[in-house]
Image (cartoon, rainbow, N blue to C red):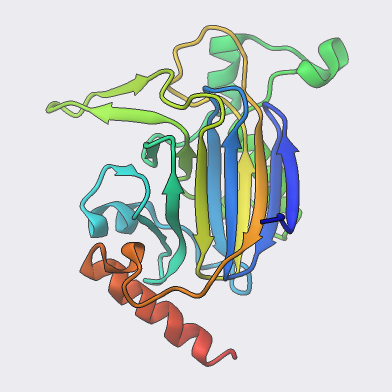
Length: 238
């Protein structure tokens, strides 16, 4: 199917746009080893945003993959993961900031190296949020797509390198009109001593309405309830 929209985000780059319900966003790890930090907001009422605790506890999971949904803080569904060849996306470790990037990679300014200067996800998020009238108070815990972090019995977190090969894809089906904010900076736990964020491509496609027996909808009672809440929300806006 021909995409409605396509774009490549360079390593260290950022992007934001509203994706309407009934569309699929496909993200592709072009070189392998990418990390895409993502924030989600209700495009019409941005005080409603992605909620990490509800997303994880409601689905009894620590990782996100096909069959899981990303929940809002109003008990609705932003998007569903309908296809995933990477197999693991994490949502507990947050994102890089200026201090972490400086300690790990040093400072490389735009004046010195132009587009190869060191960037961090937090500042990239704030730049993109500012384009939509949002700011520092609107930052919440983000999702890190294409990254795997595992917790042991003592709660220690371990980053697993090389989980996402070149060409790995994840398809997000949007159930709400959603402001999507992305940045392609390295994961905060990535042990690579070199500043080397990887690029991703994104494509947007139309999709069919969600069926009653859809896997993402029926995988747990919390998802079913959230789909019902989302349908009620849009029933009054038709």
